[in-house]
Length: 347
Image (cartoon, rainbow, N blue to C red; front, top):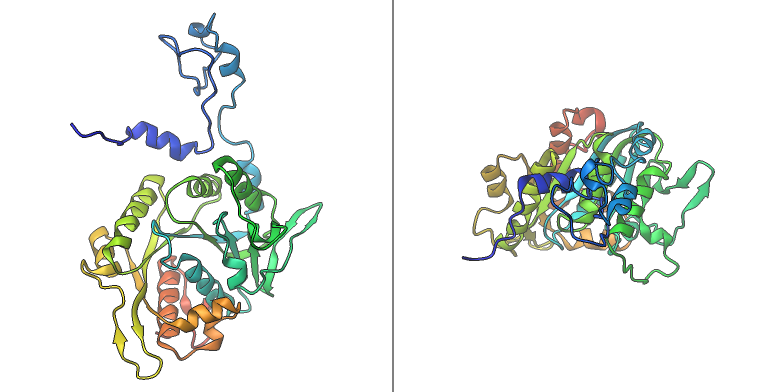
């Protein structure tokens, strides 16, 4: 019989509910009738009397994180919190996050925040043109960096002594920094907080979901590219969202095709043998927000920290991105004509 890594449902639920919980380091095996070293009765139940682990279990942290109410209070004035996810790396999550931020920020009456939780590969500051900025602190907490008058950013990049320093951290330290980004940063009144995440379904995702659960996550935008190798991992991300109770606002297919800037000929760089992002959305019963073509000028705009919407407003990619933004706004039950300046919601 082949080995299986399938986890029991109650174990999955416990990880989702308590991602930061660490099992105590026991000095002896758990005896019969042990209530469990992580349970509320650990160290105090009748069966714990005389157990070598009693003091260890009794002193272990129990219950919900005491900082959750502080995080909820700090984010009380943030209206919509949106996660940008994908099980696959390199599909353009950070790029899409930046484009969404620029699109929302085209309305001067809308205030946008971007939180970069890709701790080991922070790229948001570079793409928003604030890579060399630093964080200022006050008695009220950390001040985010403002890329525009109405666009705030927070990233570990601002904390590094040198731009190219590697972040070699285990899960608990990553979780602690994400908590600080939510608990200690003065986000203030935001219409949208976009959370850029690393690939996968691990520590960072569990932490963000747990910390934001009480203050309500609006939902997640899932990013993919057309080929099955990417879709394979994106299916796992969708499964994570469903198990974690995160609403999926829609799927975006990035790099759907290449449009030659000269002759306008369309070429599919990544072939969608199984239907691509649209096919996956139909298969999973998830809204499809749109396809964005591969345009080298998006990369150029990100390299220079400029808005692609301002630099190339008439390009096919810009029009496709506007369609994605309009679809996202509608999925949230909002009015694109109110949120986007005239002409920005055209597809």
